[in-house]
Length: 200
Image 1: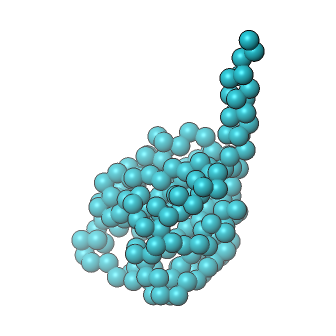
Image 2: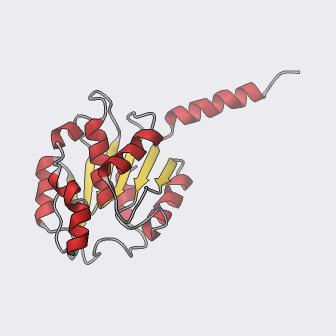
């Protein structure tokens, strides 16, 4: 009798080769259960994406080496079907991960929600935690070695991200800038449809 399982395995391999993979990183103090992350994960899976929504280590006191190291341990293959979605410090982590990656590896793109290079509105204890992220500057041109397809989503009333950041990402990364009205730091948001549009 002919072994039909071999055909199914070959079909699965073809599907995997054409499947886009999305890695989603939450922000400082949160996890993968953020409302819009759960919504996005479900929507992408329904559309046939392979999705990994990570729970990053020590989220209340995030450290660069721990967060970037977590990506290095858990992401083994990068190619042009690989996409990243980050929120706040998750965006920083993605940029720092790409900055350290082998120069000629290309990824499909990044969508950053409330990204920043500088922060406002922090309490003194928060500033101590954020200090390494703020003082160790990212070489943006090294991020661009991996992709020129970057979209940044900001809010008009973000309590931590100043409108000054909008221009930094537009100029420094050539990013497409989307400004949403009164979404704060996107902590309570249920869905962000613009992300889906950018990952088509």
